[in-house]
Image (cartoon, rainbow, N blue to C red; front, top):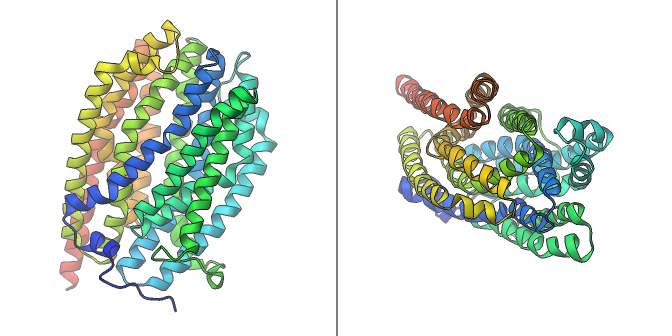
Length: 457
């Protein structure tokens, strides 16, 4: 039997009793801080490659980005599924199942990374072409993607192990690895790009080594007894029940990121039709926007263990309070970020390029796509809450409607009717509609769960 966790443990108190708004902030803010630092992975690559004054290499980094997203999507299958089950098991005081799930998450992450590396390298030319790389960007994109594929174990391990730490409320521990990994990337980028004259390939190597450091630090936390749960050799073989639970929640979570990646590729291919410098401009704007994205993702990730723990404990009133608090906190923060983007867009784009065309186009893109921020936080919060509750079918419905039935059709339609302006407005319109749909759906599900408990009692 696994050791029991004391009820007075601070992490358990935050999950079960802390005031909702304070709990959301305490779990979310450290994650946001870590994610702000983590986003520097791509911003640092973009910045140093921009110093080469080669807009085609700048465009190639953006074209290659979906490969990183796909690696994260596959790791999210294990991270989201295992995290949901860990949080619910802790809420139900089943520590042994939580430890077994944690160990299974480790094993599955290693297996998945091997599959991604082998499959990706086997189909590398087709993948690069499918990303939208053309004559001027093909070889640069291929170099970046090949390094990312070789380092899949580190990218996926860093992402998944961080999620597993957060599932037990060990948020501060999870961001230490993010910070260290980013620091390594920032130090090595100029060394590999300029000193060793490796250019875009050097940027990819620095990114992978940063992820390797991040993953190893997370492993050290587990080995040093600074976590609530520990992996164990006796749990190395997953049970059928645990596998079912992990994939039941994890597969829809992965599909969400895969569909986002597919939409990103469609977006890039439409942008290439204007010119390759438009791809560079959109890539810079999207990476700057990702700073705002990490605010809602951080609060949503912080909310997930709260929702999962209290769902396992059948504390539905607290779930509703957490949901309301998280939406209010997230939306208020995002409005402040929007104001910064609106005022300083040209200056922010200008950090990464001296091209007047890229700065002008990038500023237009940033000032348009920033309108997703007041809406997308509620969408993400709802989706992660469904995952935490072990109800991924609803998260999948949100994803399917959002990406396939709204965003991609709107992207194609608005681009056809209004050109480039229509294309960049497709995402804000999508997120506004999805905010209304997803929040109403989540509230209804929680209310129905509470009614069922009251009827049975």
